Image (cartoon, rainbow, N blue to C red; front, top):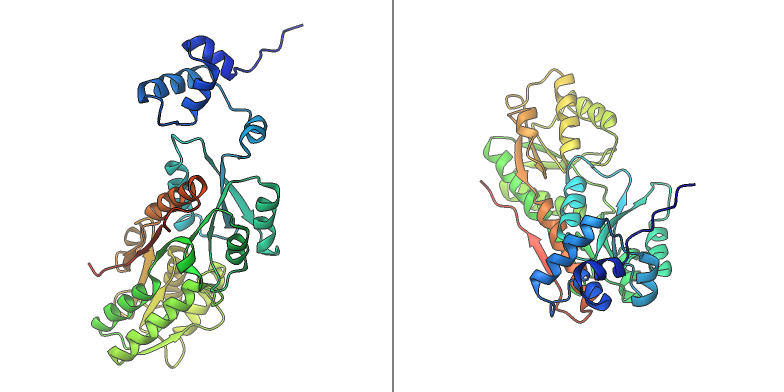
Length: 332
């Protein structure tokens, strides 16, 4: 019978490096009073022998899971903002003791369930949230529990918590201004769901800019940027056959933008001639899809890195100054 090979432990690394077990443990945790060369040597040996921390033991000793959870709706735009958030958050945690997990939230689920489970079971030491309501109950709960978190987006309590947000108010203003400069007079906004904070900001920005520019602006009824793409295609195509068809459309995501393009073309119209389309994107590819699309870059990579670092800092120092950033888009 073959003997089962024992997994390497801190003691194994200690024997290989000649360092005491507590020193090995602290070197792996990134203790700054241990020299960088020693830390690198310990990590190199750990990687070489395939050492994996016993997280149950670590949790018993420290009270921490060394996990940060990114809580995401399952219907998120995975090819754009969400993909960048995941990649950049995980990258920001490299070299630390923390790793990133994804906690999915399904459409038929109470969004509070996932957050309560994390806090009550302590399966993570911190949380990153997105798709926020103005008075998001998850944010209120985490604040009341003094549980480390940061948000991708803002709430009515943003002055009291860490966040990174793209300025959707400014985005919508720029979109209307640019469409109006191209001679478009009847603009439609394919907005996010109105229960989300950034939707209200986008609508407000578009309305104010349209009034200043002297153009018509309406929010499309019956569909949002989160609506299934086949329904967006149908709604846009039908809008193009109406008596007051829009000659400019603003969208809130790449997926919604591409669906709008298909709807426009299904209606027999030509993008860039019969009407213009303005969209934001986190991964620059819309101009390759249709060169006529007017685009604005949203730096979701910077958002993920900022949020992961903010949660790490909040875990290590609950009294640290708030980390907050509003990414303001600019023309050009």
